[in-house]
Image 1 (cartoon, rainbow, N blue to C red):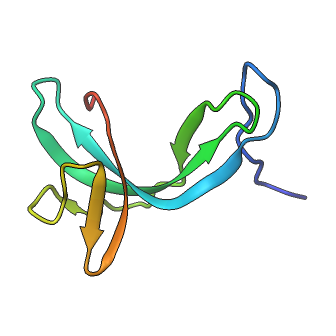
Image 2: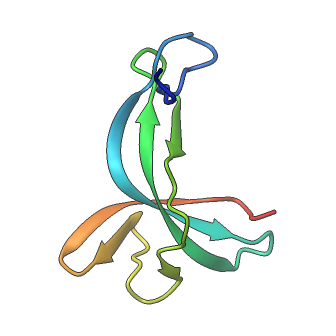
Length: 90
C-alpha cells in the first residue's frame, strides 16, 4: 500500500508538482530576527500557481550566517538555490 501522496491544491483539487528541490527556508521571529535555515522541496499547482514547501529534513541546515545572500538565493559552496523567508516562527 502506498503511504505517500503528492500535495493536493485545495482550490483546484489537482495534484501539485515538485517545481524545485532543495530550496532554503529561513525561519524568522516576529521582530524580524532570522534564526535558522531549513532545506525543503517547492511544490506548485499546475493550474493556479499556488506553491508550498514540504519535505523538510529532521535537522536545520545552519544558523543564519554570511553564506546566505539577500537576493532570494542561498549559496552552499558553489551551489546556489532559491531562498524563502517565513514571516515568523511560533
